[in-house]
Length: 281
Length: 125
Ligand SMILES: C[S@@+](CC[C@H](N)C(=O)[O-])C[C@H]1O[C@@H](n2cnc3c(N)ncnc32)[C@H](O)[C@@H]1O
Image (cartoon, rainbow over the protein chains, first blue to last red):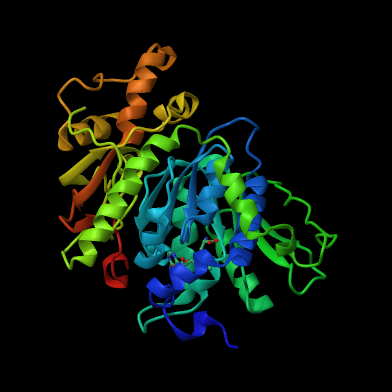
């Protein structure tokens, strides 16, 4: 099967149907959660700190969930409105979203974020989707804007799927041209399934990329450790006090469903649906 | 869109000098209470553009004086201030509206809480 990056632009590939499918595949959810955790680990944030992390190509918010569990506040950027809509339905307390094409340069003030992660998105920049797009220009724009918007001393850990060595080299060299130090960490290099590329970036001269994981994860593929339920169980941790809100929210959702069945024009559900509102501060 | 997010946004348009703050024209603003993250707010406070935050607070309809005119080291040690700052940064959401680039006037829509900063290759080249 040829790569989706070669066939369609990301905003069309990650359409409504694909976005929902993506999120309900528990094996996929497990893999993305594990990669997200690894990215967060690679940021090397002092324990107990609550930082502001940029999530590039945040998709349906799976990586954001991992960031939140690690105690961070995050801002997710994605080009696909359908993916963002799925992310928006999640009950996140400390995430926020923004629709943007990273290839046009990140739209943030300088020295703002304490770190950046990206899970399975970067390779999209290697494919020009329109005649005006030039892959290298877009990669350079992305990395220079990332360099500017990260706080000095912070790090970025970007996992991606290169389709060739040349592509991995192109991506790394654009990051270096933007001013970053660092390089590729390849986890499980001897496994076709579990092998993962992480571009680890820093501002430090003499920064040594962290050691890769070598031994195969137990049970072969990285996904084996996770099943659909484990994510849900994790989700409950540290989130008390949701009961009350959830009840009213469910009531609102049920009511809206009923109105829809009656053929009435009802607004789409999102995370603001049925939440406590205060007009005046 | 949280006011925290607004505070870190910069216009993606080519040729802008500062590019922020983007003007907020809000038609739906909601407050959704979240658990106060005092350490985070304290950590972020010095990264904020304070003037932009005060302006944004006014644009989403918060009463004048909701925020002190400047951030001082003493305030950062004051729990009740940090909680109030958390409410402004994390709990105020612009759900529907528009962001306007301060230099080019380019408008970016906000729908269901998500600002759309997409622009064409031409606009950034
Ligand atoms: C494989 S998905 C990963 C989503 C998420 N990080 C996760 O792990 O579940 C790749 C994501 O990258 C996004 N993407 C692709 N090209 C992009 C671009 N130029 N700018 C921003 N996001 C992009 C897609 O819309 C999609 O949501």
